[in-house]
Amino acid sequence: MKVLVTGHLGYIGVEAVTVLRAAGHEVVGLDIGFFNDCDFAAPPDPVPEIKVDLRDVKSSDLKGLDAVVHFAALSNDPLGDLNPNITYDINQHASVRLANAAKDAGVSRFIFSSSCSLYGAGGDGFLDETAAFNPVTPYGESKILVEQALASLADDSFTPMYLRNATAYGVSRRLRGDIVVNNLVGHAVTTGKVLLQSDGTPWRPLVHIRDIIAAAAAGLTAPKAAIHNQAFNIGRNGENYRIREVANLVAEIVPNCEVTFAPGASADKRDYRVDFTKAETKLPGFKPSWTLRAGIEELYKAYKRSLTAEDWAGPRYFRLKTVKGLQERGVLDYDLRRVAG
Image (tube, rainbow, N blue to C red):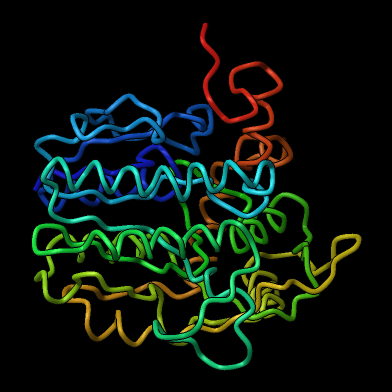
């Protein structure tokens, strides 16, 4: 199968390329390259690329493809808050434009990397795919709007699928230090402190990026009827944690560190637990395998081997800092367009 991976130079996409190629797929990438100077330990795999901003994709760019795995997005809430209108421009409108172009080009399968953040402030129960949406950020709302738009495109020739990923963690060649598990382990290794940015009480579902990639790979090969216009919460039952529990586990695994709170740490409105039964039982070929403990151990070993305190203090592994730096140097404009010359 010839597969376009958008965001193939990003945190999840860079590892998805390797997995999908190993599974026998022919992979093409699309990525604007915001994080080309952000390698961790090793560079991405070289693959053919469609060199165009996601917002400018045309159907002619996508001719000959069988499927799209769409990871590209402004990747977290602080980055989206930099310019909320751009969050909708890229995460919503460009995603819908990509899907329309893919359908026009004859692409039959479109796997959209959505998010459990669309559940937002979810209350005390475990949320399955039928739960009400309650987003608390532009990022979460944008995921809802894309899912709704893609649903309207679904027909006999075009099959969208929605991966509602839990909060990701894990080692990647394009490491992110701005997501909770990676961040807590990074602080522990480089400073001796497991630094909590909230009061630690919110619930959060967690998933290793390898399990997200496994779900995308399963979506490419599953029978159409099993995935057509369906959402799947991606994670594992038993992998919902209070943030304080995550911090305590990090302190247990990383030697000689203590749990502390950042100045001004307060409650986080994002608070929800998720039920992953549907993906674990009804997504053919999907077998999530990672636990939080195994992921923290993986991060600890990789950080000890390749992460310096100087790098951790700098912008390389933090998306908002990196993008702001590109703007300050005149590489990107306010709308996150590359500046000519």
